[in-house]
Length: 612
Image 1 (cartoon, rainbow, N blue to C red):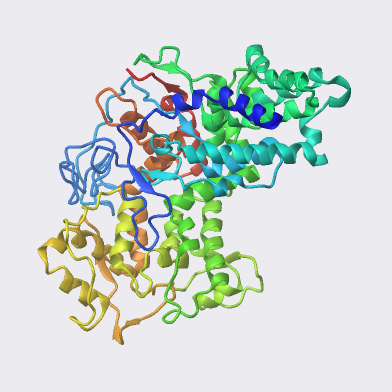
Image 2 (image 1 turned 90 degrees about the vertical axis):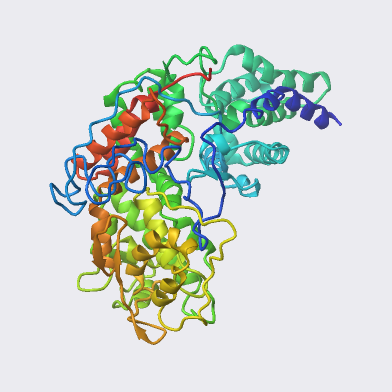
């Protein structure tokens, strides 16, 4: 009975949750159910285009052959033109030349991020770093909603009664483990609780709450937590019982469950700098999907996180940490669809070679390639054109390569083969296929959405999107051509299919082939701006050189870093900030660390405003 009374105290301490969770999704909200986007290709369909068409800054659309007023060629520079007259120069591979696009006006509004609930990954990582646990309690929480292609978008991370129930269950289990496991207890309880009683309990809470809430804690807040310790004493319970309830309350508090950023004047549109501890949290959840470490807390205490040099040093340090694997797992996992590999289900009768060992090897290959960009400094555009990959014996066999003599992936040259870059990797090719065949449509849509940030029109209502192979015999190209003869279908397929058809030499699990349905494969294709290619390697080179590739990657990472979509309203900072970051990213050779640093030191990352 006494324990239930303690639970009531937790409920009282957390009563603020009911007010906190009432904050509705904002006007940027765009929900995709988590887990979508595998064979269906829906995740990322809202991408980072926000409310501005295909980019954050509409242009006049006079650039090159791919220009459009604000349509598929729109965005910062238009699909066919570059800010200096094409992706590769006056008549480079980005288009047929074009007018120079002036930078957007600077703007003064840094925007705001809705109160950000920790998503499932962030919760698991945070309790790991806070308590030293190996548990993953958030695996049992409701699936996180997705917005703008990611599951860390604050607007859609709502809170339900089931979440609160799960948080209580997790808090009970985590605190019990922390107090009963010697190695975990020693990092939490640093005094003699039995001998010092309430004095020791206060010490524990004074040390623990600032870490859990990721900011300094006021004496009055510790006093409130100590109420359960005092109550336990009046009911003849041991001090440890009261401390246990207080620790649960810390983990049930909105200060733990949410990433709180305060506005001095909540209804004011006047911009203000984030607090030092708020910057520390933004940076740590951006790069590690977890709480700040001791170095970040120390920098916040020293008030150095507003200095560019300090932020640059932190980015370098944090990207070198093993915890930076989180940006591969969570950013690249959603941007490149690496997460979807786990859910792919090719038809075992048609593709008996696909098994769990191949699935695992495909995922490891894509993760290792992205780590080359994050850790080893490979230029981001080389993701598309690299002449090497990372394969173990299982994947090497699948690709028709010599055995590498390793069950773990090793770097393998692809020189002289039909492969190179992520567009020829089995994981990507599998998740953009149907169970029983390839899908040039899904592959083309993925390239447009994820790599170029170009909008694909939604299919008209009630249109039949299926293809009946019995009506048209021949290759899938021929079947799609017949499908596009229907004007309702042609609206979407005329832009997506000609891109994806360039990858038809790879089947639904990424094995190379030269025939389809017994007929030779024609892998020629065309980008929306009219540039033609033949086969995957030529397609990859064109996409890597496309003016939209750099812009798109900047927008994707910017959206992930801030937990909100870019805005293009008059006076907003986003258009000019994104333009400047994109120019720097391209000018510095597509260096990922430079991109992260540019985002982390941008005025929109370091400032916010209230909600008028």
